Length: 160
Image (cartoon, rainbow, N blue to C red; front, top):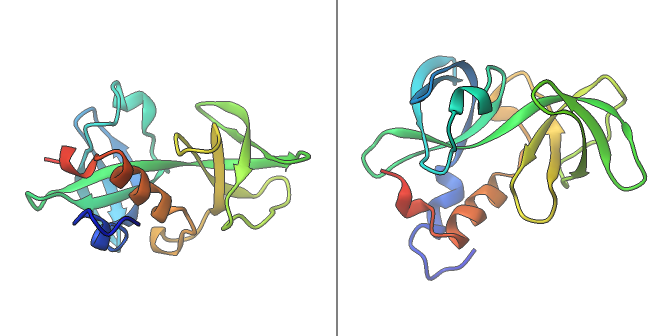
């Protein structure tokens, strides 16, 4: 990461994951570390949020400058349908079947297994990260890429 931005030094350390249990337009309820808590959305999350964030989504969060937790990113819980020549085919309820590029954390799963799916990070329309896990803290997802995206596009400063 670029050492010239003060957010870079601690960006990755400040990111943590949770699982969405309930969704409202202005915030969602996230389970993290055995606790259920309301968490607001970062301004870059487009509306209507109740159609874009769903229970079961894994989310990356940070604590904003005002001390309030904010959702920065989300991964879908998707089903592996099969391997293509250079991509993984997955099915996710809101998007149907998609072809995703595997992240380094992706362990090729058999059809029927579940993995974390995301869209919006540079390099591919869809990415598949690690397999779904029992707790959010165990998830093998690309937090470093999310931090890099926020740093490179000056998005840290948009958090209230």
